[in-house]
Image 1 (cartoon, rainbow over the protein chains, first blue to last red):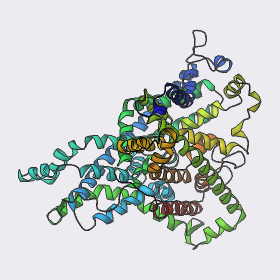
Image 2 (image 1 turned 120 degrees about the vertical axis):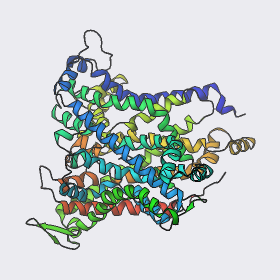
Image 3 (image 1 turned 120 degrees about the horizontal axis):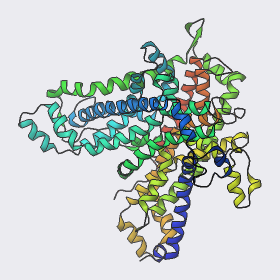
Image 4 (image 1 turned 180 degrees about the vertical axis):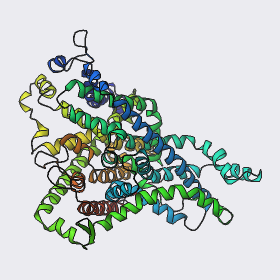
Length: 279
Length: 325
């Protein structure tokens, strides 16, 4: 066997390098979270220590939550993200089913049509999208954002899902047809449950860019009532820029839900990425 | 919108239907019903606006009325100094931004992936989770976090540098024209290394054991095995990572807006196409918004991305040797 790979010294060096990079990834986030629980004096005097009894202070959180708007921002982000994911999954799965199940003349052309949306970012259409949203009175609404993110997420969703749907047993569907099931029943009752893992992967992929987007909330829904967490944190921090407690607390509040979701779904997400790439 | 959107770029385009797919005639109505919602939203909210933006670039607004002006907006954009100076500076900065990504993101990604894919490595899942964490955070979080860390007011960075005796090296990097753009590119690399790392890691895992064993029998081991056997097999993946980075970089906006504001300071030294588009289209302290000029800039970005993707698809990807196992 290969000696260089199994030598304890080589292994040790690899772990040193990996741990060093782990520290580089985690330390900035940790620094913000830890300092958000400290008093202003401790933030500046000893930024690199854990909070103790004398330096522990929640004044930042009181300032942020006292504004009373952050909860609203979270609700807005939830509505927009969940709404978009639901639409992307349902519409995407339906289209993927049509493209993978039936042979028809426009099949390839439609595949190419959707591929355009994978390569060109939707942001480049912003000028026209804003005009359209103004005309349809969808500025500062959840629906406006949901429509944009649905269009953004659909092309990739259709590609991933149709690849998975090709793997669903044809015999199973034909057996359903012989038993008199309609095409819609076959789709909802037979095919959808079988591609559930793919749906989860698409959901995670779709969710991250939507939750984190700053561009469209800034342009299409900047109003206080529909502001998402990402835009809300951006404008809040801009406003409180000299109040370090509040800034650190706001950042922590924006990080924690993402962190929780990530730790819950990281296995799914990483498997999704690697599965897509191996293929 | 992160680069994750564009993962399926490498998927074969035609023939989505499985070989044994059902003939269409009986199902024409079903096909229409299944396709309608997705095609409707996608066409109305993405495709039509994309092409409408190209059209708007040929118009201008005079006293609230839209008037066709042909290529005048582009002549102004490239010819009039008040536009062209910003355009060329944004384009140049964007190129620098992209080059720094290419120089660092792929090599770091390859190095991390190579270490993670060592057989019987302990703690692999932990490392992967940690390395991918910054990619999950929004630019707003990442931007402000690094702005605080690099801030001379907080002093965390000088303190850390002081601990290793390099206190004199500290400068307010984000505030200096000479270093702000590079610093922002490094922050962006820090955030997005996770994507190439993950894709290359998957590609390395996909190399069959027989190939590696054959190399070992021939006495090719360790680092030379990586260079001679594994690296050639993962070039296509590195190509995908590069084109993802290209598309992502040439419509980047959020990080620079968060850290430096719409004016992409200091003195426009961090202005890239995304911030230039936003400023022109939306307006700011210095100028009123001009949707038609914004559309012209979006058209230029569209062309750049199209050229980049075409060069990759027809020039690079076709010449790359792919190995079927």
